[in-house]
Image 1 (cartoon, helix red, strand yellow):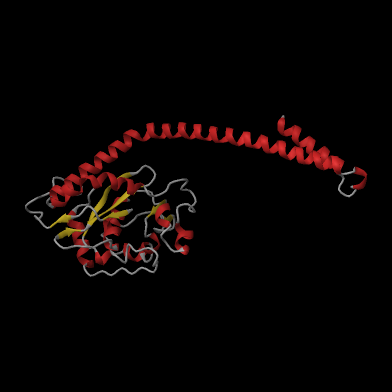
Image 2 (cartoon, rainbow, N blue to C red; image 1 turned 30 degrees about the vertical axis):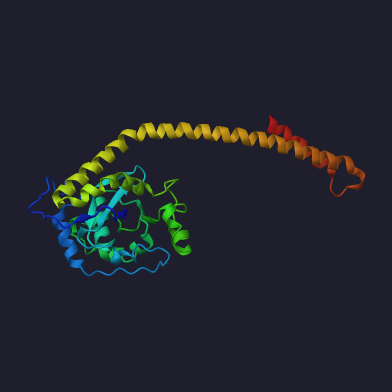
Length: 299
């Protein structure tokens, strides 16, 4: 989950003059229920204690002159890097909890709640999350046999974790979260790079046309990702195998050279030490053990 402050929108037309073709049918959340929810948080204040990361501190200073939308918040599958249905929403005043809560829980409706949440300010977002869930519309409340949060693991994307305090970084970086493998959590940033190509046109559109265009752009991004999943995975696997083989070949050459150096050093010690003067060290026994070990390894 992340926010993008480049996808702004000017004050041009309202919904009545520019209706959406399918409100809430694809990736952008339905504007009606979303705006009703946000009306309760017009003056919301979010306070962060992680002073090393400035996203929340800057949210009230975003340039909003002449804008009705300061950006978008979105939720993506970190493993496959595809945007979630109904997982994109407009931001009116920076990155507020009210917006991101709605977008996140809208995106995971119907999902098995054994998940890892990757968010660059998850160390603050998770605080009082259980209480904020109760303020969401009933249809967005997570449903399951266990309370929400029992099988949910918070994590900070690998690159963003470096900007957090040591306490946040060591507790939440995806490098340290069990079960995520090498997922870096930065896939949504790569998704933004695709969407930012449409920044100029989206900025001048009415809201209805803007949302339909976002649905189309995100749908194309997901389609390309789905088409390339198998090919990309196979290409990556083949590349990794070749890279590992080259690395192991280089290490084998180095290991052989080091073995020769160690053998020469051991032979030098054996020639200079009189076995009868080294009864406590039992040099012959050690030599036999080394020879036995070497023969077993070479076999």
